[in-house]
Image 1 (cartoon, rainbow, N blue to C red):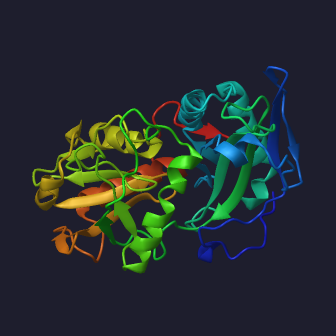
Image 2 (image 1 turned 180 degrees about the horizontal axis):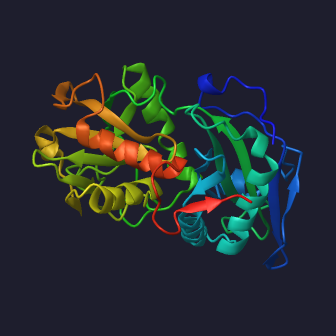
Image 3 (image 1 turned 180 degrees about the vertical axis):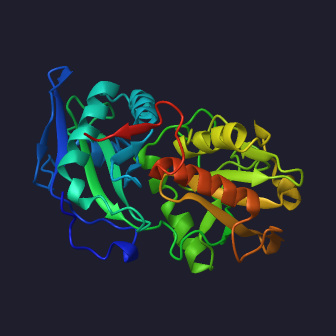
Length: 341
């Protein structure tokens, strides 16, 4: 298929409408079979549940062109599973993983001309989401829902590629115990907007959120999990019931242990430990893994020894290996690559 005529190497991380999107509707207690449509507009009541009470959940993944010309999606089965858990938490009837994966296959195949060519560093971002669409004025779940999947070609999430970033410890709380921090709900991201605007105004790329109960434990950023390395080369990731179970983080843990022979620990990480780590990074679908060079703790600068110039050696090994798996230059574990045919 002939690719769209875009400046692939210089794409930003923004929305660009593509030709097709997948839509399914939940009415009368069941989901319909769904279909591809070309209209990118949504028509709903002014009193729709999503508008009144933020009843919406979503996912994010990417499609790539591999070194041998295939179009693939990375581990969408885990996104399907996570969307089910998110939907249940907000009383949204979950769409089946089978329909989720079929929708992904249909829309990526239809928009295959928008999948960036191999070697450009760009990808086709895939955004499945579902929301309450019927009118709701009392505080209760909607009766009808819509599930949609849009695609858009994107470049790197952080401008300049995987250069070390500066982050700051936020005074805002990201999630409460027994709240919604472990699901991918739109409301979680809405509360982080003021914090990220303030961080950017103060010269930082991202926020580091601490646990809301004690403010002593590292959790995550507004949209990514953390990865740290100790002096002995152990990979450490924060563990908490209020952290989103990142597909990328779980994949990096497997790669570190099984491909690179690293020791991996998923455990509580205390703020007081930050001075001891020799490498740090944020990981997620959008950025894959991006190194951290500096952490600002209310004016006290914690400078990560790997520095502000480039990725540390362990972080680079992780990044290169996972990207190789995604792009087909390194053999993937069974079931990790979903080929679009």
